[in-house]
Image (cartoon, rainbow, N blue to C red; front, side, top):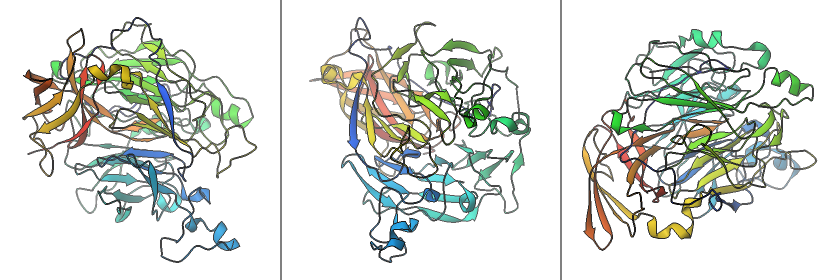
Amino acid sequence: MLIFLSCSKIMITILFFLVCFEFSNGVNVRSSEGRKGQWQLLLNNTGVVGMHVALTYKDTVIMFDQTGAGQSGYRLRRRFNGSRCTINHHDLLDSTCYAHSVEYDISANKVRPLRLDTDPWCSSASFLSNGTLLQTGGFEKGAKRVRFYRPCGNHQCDWIQSKKTLSDERWYASSQILPEHNRVVVVGGRRVFTYEFVPKTSPGEKSFDLPFLHQTNDRDGGGNNLYPFLHLSSDGNLNRVIKTFPRIPGEGSRNYPSSGSSVMLPLDHRDNFQKVEVMVCGGSSIGALEAARKGRFLEGLRSCGRMVITGNNNKWEMEYMPKPRLLHDMLILPTGNILIINGAKHGCAGYENARNASLEPYLYSPNKKLGKRFTMLKSTKIARMYHSSATLLSDGRVLVAGGNPHGRYIFHNVAYPTELRLQAFVPHYMESRYHNWRPSNMTIYGGGGRHAIGYGKEFRVEFFLEKRMQNNEVGFSAYAPPFTTHSFAMNQRMLKLRCKSLDRKGGGWVVAVLEAPPSPNVAPSGYYLLTVVNGGIPSMSQWVQFAHA
């Protein structure tokens, strides 16, 4: 099902998820002290701004910004056409002597440059079933372009630009992988009120008008329906409007340039993945864009709304973050909790339009009682505002990158310089004191290599578990890593998988028999991170591929 949440109204949502045994919200600790996490500085210079990021199944991270920003922090020895970049004045100013996309090797903690032929500034992307990143849109000559990045083990991969183009220019659009095999829907864009599919089903297929985008367009507010929130529901309804949802209570707006964020909470096998719940948090006050252009930075929104979009009782449940927030990212952790990270407290998106960085991440626990769900985590010292991003890694850390509220790279004499440092936020449960409870040495049987696990099929997972938590709960999550940009993690989803049996073999080894998602409506084919969660303590994740066998 497609739903659309925009401004204070509803934006685009296509939903899904899954789980096994119930997860606890944490370990047996009496208070939140000592559970605030840690920060690591990984690199002082990634070379390019982490404006767009995506984790590949080869455990590398693709980052890119905009070719029109000029000379990046990663200078090339040679242009991509092979000619040498010298130190003469012309080459020092030539943007083709600088990279605007890099691949970050997590294990080596290094980056290497990638080629970009057209500008992907403010674009979108989705992963296909074989792990290829399908990247769409951008700025000017890049606005109709389709690009592919197929990760490889030899680190020689690079961007490939398709000869086929989009029907409409897609600048500030969103994309979502669909249950149909390797088909993506791309929605919206600046002054574009349509959606289209990639690939097309016929040579003459064009884009389709979407009245919702016309109805939610705020011309005085810079659109306020750009980068619409898309989530894939599990009901299999596509290409038709089947219900209209109530407007989210309160004033203000949620979408670019107001730039709140949205997440779909994990789907659960216990209801056959049919309860689908969307959450929207933060954003900007009414008139924030116009005020920012005049040097006034209005306080952002504290409110969050949750709504079950399936069934017949579709009402917003409202609650409040500890402080106002916009320009933030919302990521699903292996425990099923939500990490709210990056952002600002005043203003809106755009160059020089925000102030007062949000340095403290929040942990949101969906299963706790209303009023008890938010926990403030350890602060960073690095502001991550406009053009920042974050993504979950397979080792359990959260990679945090980017930040550039300027049209070019500016490092001095501004409130918030262009940020090229790369960090990781380390959740508390990764600390050594939880080592005895952490599942380890996971092996997946029944798939792997070139063989995907078929929908609804059983597969085995073997792992080592020294101690079980007192609550005796062991769960299994499957997570589809997102493409993250402009405060929205596109295609992010978590599935809580059914565990059919759990047996100890002796010596601490455990064998679980799990059931794969039932259909692509629940989990579009592709690579997922499988995690064992022991009473709130997750293992390191392993990659698994779900598809029609």
